[in-house]
Length: 276
Image 1 (tube, rainbow, N blue to C red):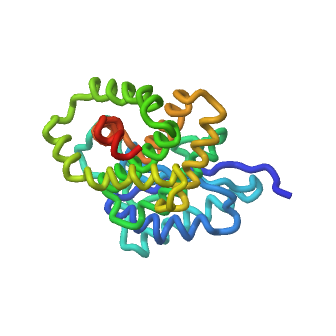
Image 2 (image 1 turned 45 degrees about the vertical axis):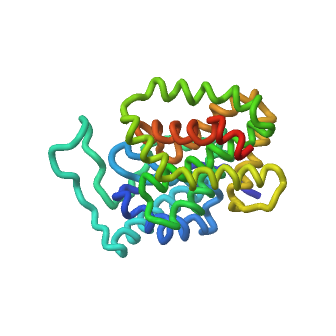
């Protein structure tokens, strides 16, 4: 019988160019160990580039597991040739970043009431992100998949439901003008065919046609459908969108681009007619 449990929260500080290795040969083997009951993963930039890893353990095992996590990831960084390094001066902002290639504890709180959502997104991140170098484009595309899956689930019949959410994204763009329109348009044009393929695949899976989406994404859509059935649609949209962006570290210019891509590919009349 499972006893009382506790969340242990860690932050793995290292350059984003090394995140692929951290996921594949660090985090993936670690979370399969028997004492870890569940986990949450997030990308973060506070105090330096880092991956947040929270894991659930029985309370009487928490102390030993924390020590094991410290030793495990210190050994991982060392074996990968990633030695701890301080950030040189001057630094941006008023706070010193944490040393690179280190594990830190207790810098945030794990989500307990909404753990099922964070776990679902974590599983998708583990499946999707480590396949390629983890760059802004990779993160944005993963977020795009999740947001489009949510919107397709919210708008099963197309036009009428979509008319409700289109102004939400349009208003976000009107209040976010820090990126030049030509740059946004060039980025959109360079990736439009990929975006449209994503929408077609997800829409086809929703309508019961041949499944062409990863199993984790299908599970995410099922979770979205359940949550949508439990609360007003507009509230569930805000609620789930928040967790997507939170865990993938979508802020600032990345958030502006993401909203622009979604609006231009999912809500324009041409896209509505050709995909839904």
